[in-house]
Length: 139
Image 1 (cartoon, rainbow, N blue to C red):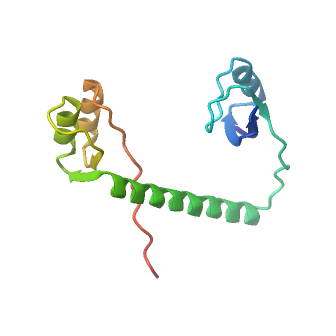
Image 2: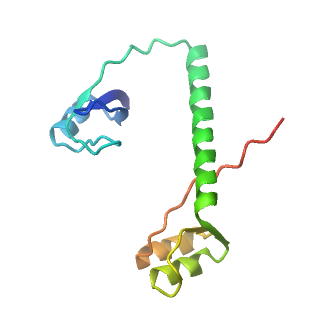
């Protein structure tokens, strides 16, 4: 896999991963790459510095990326908890009631087994698993 820094025609920059440069060019020409900010499909490679990192720098960069991802996931969890109702183990039942108009439409979250989630998806109930990360513990 190869990572490219990309830019859309509106100057939004983002990263894309491709099997190789030929795949990037094929996808770009076919307009299969879209800007995650605005949806623009006119994409070009952006300038990037060569990656000549020592293993120590690479490890530090990976640790920083992991920390940043955990922070984003915690922010996401707080957002879900503040804007949706926790229905716990009743999630599959409540999701169906909302989908079929038997209960008020609202944001909910809770627990479902993989089988229950698959059944909901097959029924056309709009659900998605969310990465649930615990809040940071003070040391």
